[in-house]
Each structure stands twice: as structure tokens, then as C-alpha cells.
Image 1 (cartoon, rainbow, N blue to C red):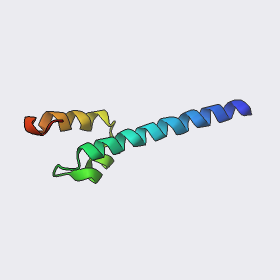
Image 2: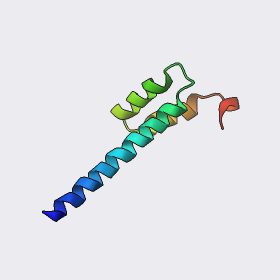
Image 3: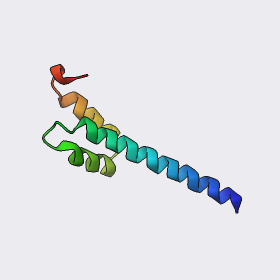
Length: 65
């Protein structure tokens, strides 16, 4: 039975990391037309990597930091 708790904590860590990456994607997209919540939910539906790529490809060069 103790081995099961190791898997639960691993899944909890993965879910927490996924939510954190999705939140970071939302923060990056907060000044766009879609906004924070749009990019947050988009990154929840698809992997957070795809909205990040879209953000960096479509943002003007002067706004990159």
C-alpha cells in the first residue's frame, strides 16, 4: 500500500506543474486580445507549449522582453 502513495504524489506534482505552466502562459498573454483567461484555458485544453509558441511568433518585436 505505501507504494501507491508515491504515484499519487507524482501525479499531484505533474498536475501542479501543468497548472503552473498554464498560468505562466496566461500571464504572457494578458496584454493580448485573448487575455489571461483565454490563454490559460487554451493552454489547459492543449499543451502550454503551443500557446507559448503562438505568443512569441505573433508578438511585435518591440514588446519582447
